[in-house]
Structure formats: structure tokens, C-alpha cells
Length: 22
Image (cartoon, rainbow, N blue to C red; front, side, top):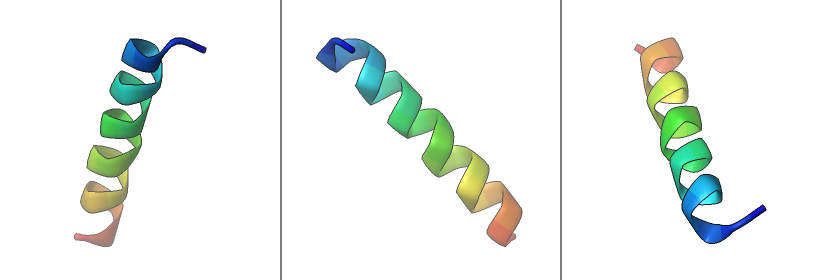
């Protein structure tokens, strides 16, 4: 996995987590 994709993936995960936590 290259850094750019990992960065995008991490951002998606953080946004999803933020949404789930309310």
C-alpha cells in the first residue's frame, strides 16, 4: 500500500468513526 492510499483510507476510517461515535 502506498502512502497516498493509506492516507486516504485512514481519513475515511476516521470520518466513519467520528460519525459512528456521534
